[in-house]
Image (cartoon, rainbow, N blue to C red; front, side):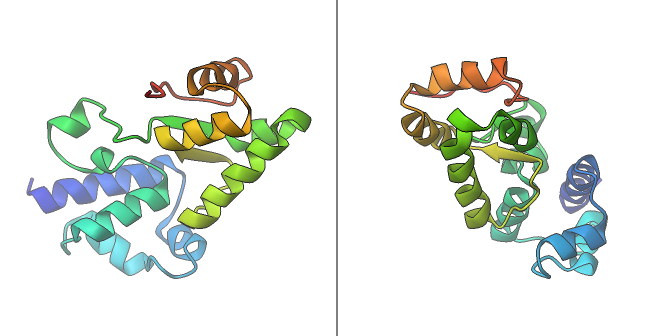
Length: 158
């Protein structure tokens, strides 16, 4: 399998894992990601630039390394996207987490990610969220795990 085909296969796997059809990608991106173009990337018929690959990974809410062939992807390196938050669960907690939810909404707007169910955040996002909640990144991550909001493991970084 060529490098282009392997990247395409990884892109397809991420999209399918997110439960998205090619048409869903086009619709949710407001046409930024055309179904035909994404499909051609996935088949390996078309090369994707590094910039577009990073943008598509961000749109999917995954680390760029998860769509790149090689040891970094195989080892599960996250490039800072190791924390996945269940937004529906967070919303159900209300009160104390309202400011946190509003901050996460600004991240979604900046990224153009309107999934509304889950959001992948970077370690630096976690540090900012900790400030909003008047705690440390490690304590906030532990709290979010206990509350069933954080669904993946990540180290918050210092």
